[in-house]
Length: 82
Image 1 (cartoon, rainbow, N blue to C red):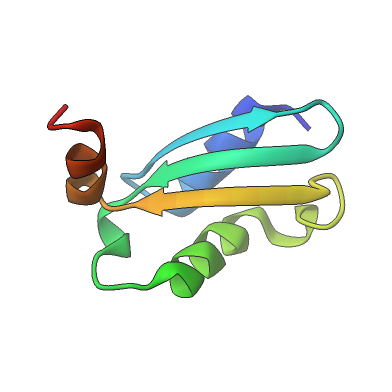
Image 2 (spheres, one colour):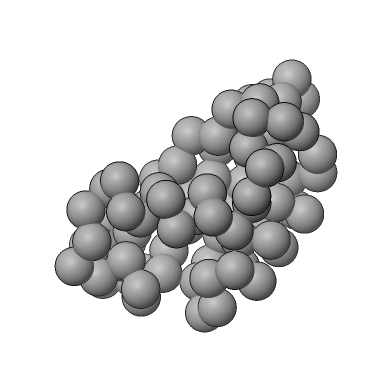
C-alpha cells in the first residue's frame, strides 16, 4: 500500500492532524502523527485512534505499523521549537 495513501486515510480520520508515513517496501510502515486530539491521552488510546482510521487494512495490506504520536506542543518541544 502506498505510504501517501495511508497518510491520507489517517488525516481524513483525524481531521486537523498531520501524518507522515514511510515504508520498507515489505508491508512494514512507520507513521508520525501529530494531532491536537492526542492531548491528555496516553500512548495506547492515541494508537487506537490512528488504527481506527485504517480499519482492517492493519494486519492485511499493512502488515505492521509502528506509530509515533505527538500533540503539536510535544512535537515542537521535541524538535526544538519549530
